[in-house]
Length: 501
Image 1 (tube, rainbow, N blue to C red):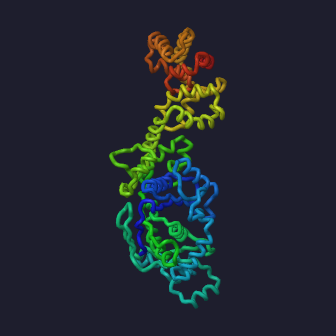
Image 2 (cartoon, rainbow, N blue to C red):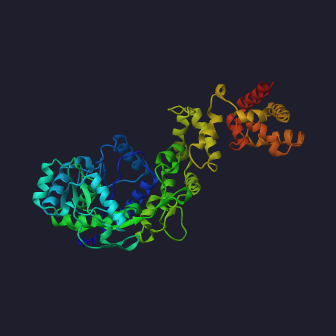
């Protein structure tokens, strides 16, 4: 086996190499995060490359979404698209000539061979292996064909894939996460590296790029564990034909992320979609903080940290091999904690895009809107778990009076006689109020509704809240009424009476 890398510090080079298919998902992002943190911790290089050789599935839209997602998350890369580097290009679709050359050199050196077996013949081989109680896999029929037999198949017009010739040996390595690993030779059959149409497969392009880009450490998902022996063999072959520097990367396989039902989180699970978190208003800081805890811990039961702290604390030895369970409630709670670290101006800026999308705030924020937000945002900061909740919490303050509506289910509550009695008493008390501030509003309403009508606070203020905010749950009522202003509050209470009448 080729030399295992002794690289350390600035010599360390890691890579994140997703395929641009579909929307980015949280499992992919966790892999990027761990590689980024490892590179930053040791002062190494974080390489971002795109594995887009599958023309049928890869899309430009997904490619752009990958780049934009990493930028949104704050995971910067040292080499890759839009950055460049000494080992580009960093999109596999632009490296076709490289793969064709390496494939031919592997063939010429005897590390690969043409395989003419049909799909039917391959299935018959698998059936025979199963019947014999053997591990399924290619039986190397074409590996030992002589030149005449190969020529005969070409003359017949048989298409051929290119297979890698696995050395007849067992495979062992010291996994950075899982420790000593061993695969028996019977579980690693010869595998295809090039299709009949000449397109290279992942099994070729991935190790070729690792070798040419001088990758020293590979942190990837546990689902790729069984492919490691094939790559170790390929690294040896590449070293033999002079591709790369002859050094085999060290591997570390990250634990599965489990979803509901104790099964692996898949792209089909709603909570796996990065787009969902962005749409709901999770902070990148909060999401990355939570994803870091899926298989890693900084120690001392610490669960709250930013990217800079993670990079400082990240040790591969603290990555746990056991599956990690994705807990959306905990992710949301951590996000809420991050929201509460933001200053008032920062929180307003983060909230604005959601308010603008809901047409509550103009693209160019007016002075009045800015004033309302300055007063109201501190009232909701403790209640926010995701930024999109601000739309419901602040909408009643920002909506034009002509567009203000009460939630349909709350209209029924407001129509009840006891609610109307509260609305009428509130109007009478508030019309006489001269000092319009939260404390004065609370005092006059408590006198009128709790003392005057004998209602408990829960029942006394509920109808007022619905009439003013349109909702059963809102930011602190009296402070909100102070922000909304005397005239608008009285108008909404009067409207509540008219709608019933």
